[in-house]
Length: 79
Image 1 (cartoon, one colour):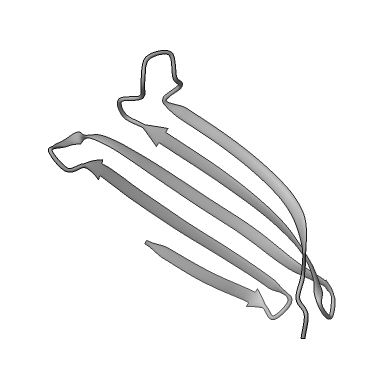
Image 2 (tube, rainbow, N blue to C red):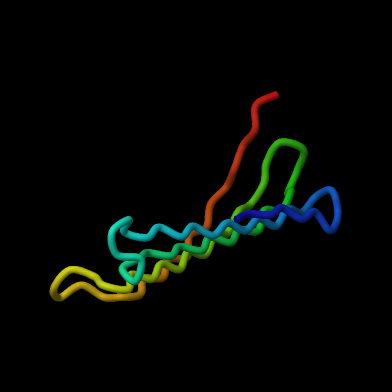
């Protein structure tokens, strides 16, 4: 599931959720959420920050169930 929201033309908020079950065992699944905020700085240059949260219900031995990642960057659009 995903959505995109633009409170004003210069700002975009996006969210996507993925649910990935193991076909023969639905209690074994991964769920990933990704939320990003993008803001226009000047005409073709934007700043983007993205937060990822991943949950694995039955991870491999000695692997965490939950992972978080925060990334920041710039987006330049050629037009």
